[in-house]
Length: 114
Image (cartoon, rainbow, N blue to C red; front, side, top):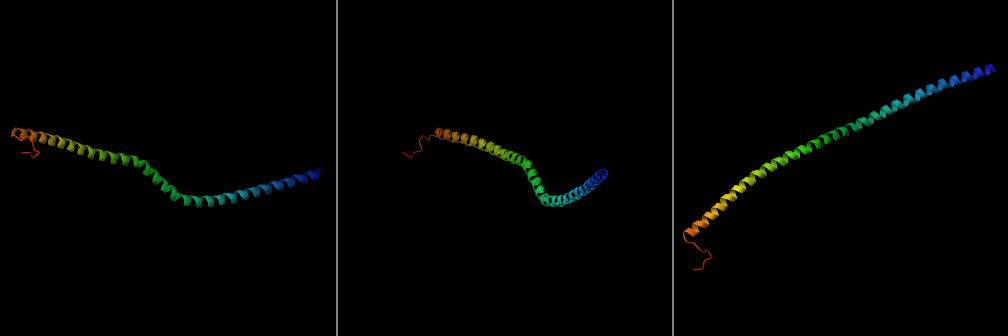
């Protein structure tokens, strides 16, 4: 009985050692396989990540560019508005002046009726 128990314990120890050895071997295999597999994926994805970073940077810069362009266009339009406003003042005054001069020199009607 005692010999059977010792034999059973030895067998269990052998099985545990072999099981641990098998588990270590499987773990090493899987880790090396996964490392190779993951490194291949990383090398394939790395350029895409670079493009993603560039797109992200460009997206962050887009509002600044849009606002800069909008402010330039606004300044140009304000200058044009100022110019057109003063031009309208001058032309309005010129029109009134010509009308007043015409009345002053006796031109009453320009319809051509004599």
